[in-house]
Structures are given as structure tokens and as C-alpha cells.
Image 1 (cartoon, one colour):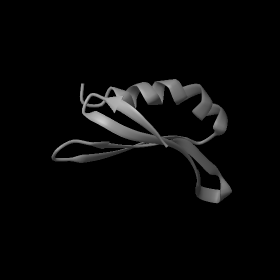
Image 2: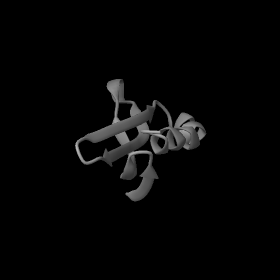
Image 3: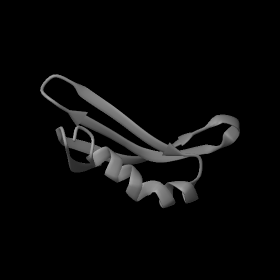
Image 4: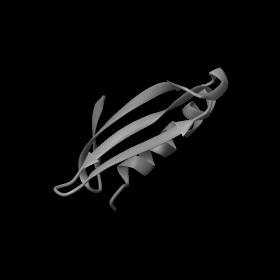
Length: 68
């Protein structure tokens, strides 16, 4: 887990691998962003490790730009 700065303030970002349907796996980012009034839980996921590697930078940019 790592700290990140976003448009709404500080957040936490981590990668995950989860079980998908029919024995597949899901790869992605899970982020929690806190404001004074709200908590945002953001999930960006792909159905393969190859796709996640390709989209990792884009997912991170989307998460970091939240609230801007």
C-alpha cells in the first residue's frame, strides 16, 4: 500500500489479484480517497495481467486526478 496525492487530498493505493468467474483472475488497483465528508473507494481492474500492465499508468492517472 502506498500514499498518493489526489485532487481531493491524500489517499491510499494498492494492487490486487482476485478470483474471477470460471477460475479466471482479476488484476487491478484499489484506492481509498478521504475528504472531510466522504470516502471514495475506487477500483480499476483488468481480466489479465498483460492488460493490467498495459493500463497501469492510465489507471493511476485517473485515480490521482479524482476531484480535479
